[in-house]
Picture 1 (tube, rainbow, N blue to C red):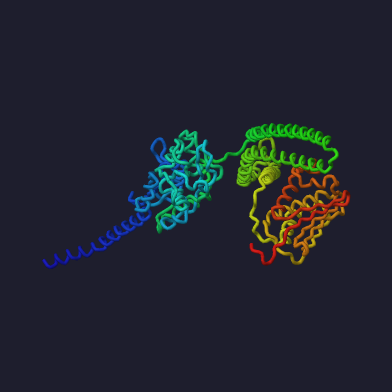
Picture 2 (spheres, rainbow, N blue to C red):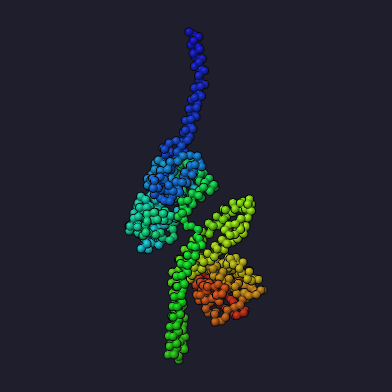
Length: 593
C-alpha cells in the first residue's frame, strides 16, 4: 500500500510542468487580448476603434441614401485603419450628441472637428487634414450684411455646439441666436425667411444649397475665418491620436490622401479653367465694358461740346472782363475733370468685380498647374528615357519641358498685372485713407524703392547716383505708400532716357527753413513739353500712350503725397531732362504720434 501511494505522488508531480505551461499560455493570451483592447475604448469589442462624426456635414461626413456613412472623413478613416492594421466602427449622429459621446467615452475619436484654442482644454487634435472656410450666408434680396462686423445685433442661425456657435458666444455674447441640430436645418430656415444670416462653412453650404435646391441664399464673398480641421480625441488619449497621425502621414506620402481629397473635395472646389471658359469670361466682361466706355465717350464729348458752346456765349457777353473769363475757364476744367472722375467711379464699380472674379480663378489655378507639372515631370522624364521623345498634343515633350514652365510663369505675371491695374483703378477712384501713423525714415524708403526697381533702372541707364543726407527728421505716414511713389518716379525717369551714357540722380535733404524733408529724382531724359507740365498729375493723361501707359501713375502718386500733407513738384526742359521733388512735412521731435 505504501508503494502505491508513492507512485501516485510521483505521477502528480510529473504533471506540474504541464499545468504550469497551460497556466502561462492562458496568462499570455489574456495579456495579448488586454493589449489589443487598449486601442479602442468605445465598448464595440476588442481591438475596434469607435469613430464618431456628424451625420449631416457633407461632403466631409454624412449618411448616404442607403443609410451608410459616406464622405471624405469616412473614406479617410477607413484608409488609415487599413494601413495601420486595426478595425474601426464608424457611427454618425447629431453633432451635439457626438461631442457628448466623446466626452463620456462612448466613442474613441471624432473624425472631423474644427480647431480652436478653447477646445484644446477638452480634446487633443491631430494633424489637420483639411481647412474650413467659414462664411456668412444671407438671402439674395437682403444685402445688409457684408462682413462679420455687420452681424452684431442681428438674428444669427448657427448649429448647436458647432465652432460657429462657440465663436458667436465670444464675439457677441448678447447676440440673438437661433440654434439648430444640423447645418442643413440652418440653411433651410434662412431660405424660408428666418433670421438675418447663417454661419456655415462655405464648402458644406455650397453642397447643401445644391443638394436641397435652396435658391434664395448666397454666401458673402469673403470668408470670415479659416480653421484647421482634423481628428480629435478626449484629452489625454494619446495612443489613439498617435495611430491616426501616423496613418495620416503614411497616406500623404503614398499619394492616397490626395486621391481621397480630390474625389470628395475637388468636385466642389474650383476646377481648371479651359480656354473655352476663358474666352467666354473675357467676352462677357469685354462687351459690357466696351458699351460703357462707348457711352462714356459719347457722353463726355456731348458734354464738352455743350460746355464749349456755353463758354463761347459767355466769352462774347463778357469779352471786356478778362478776369471773369479766366475764372469761367477754370470752372470749365473742373467740370470736365469732375465728369471724368464720375465716369471712372461708375466704370470701376461696374466692371472691377467682374474682372477680378475670372482673373482670380486664373491666379488660383495656375499654381495647381505648376504643381501638377512638377509632380508629373519625373514620370514623364522616366518615360522619355525608356522610349525616347514623344508627343503631348501636337508638341514634343522635350520642347514642352523647357517652354511650359515659362508659359505658366508668363501667364501668372500677366494675371497679376491685370489685378494690379484694376487695384490702381479702384485706389484712384476710392482715394481711401490709409494708416498714416508710421514714423518713416525717407532714406530707408528710397533705398527700398531702389532695390525694387534696380534691374529695370540699370537696364535703361548706365548710372544711378544716390546722395542721401546723413541725418533726416522722421516723417509721419505709410512707408509702403511712400515707397510706391518713389518707385513710380524712378520708373518714369528710367523710361525717359534715350541713347547711352545718361544717368538718374536720387537725393534727400532737410529744408530747415520750411521744416520739410525733400526727395529729388533727376534724370537726363527727353524732358516734358511746357504745355504738358501742368497736366502730369491729371488722371489718364500720359505722354507714353504708345508704350502702354494708362496715365494713372503720377495721379495716384500725387494723391498719396497729398494724403501725407506734402506736394509733388515738376521742373523740366525738353531735351535736358526732368526733376521731380517730393516735399513732406518733417515730424518735430516733441510731436505726439
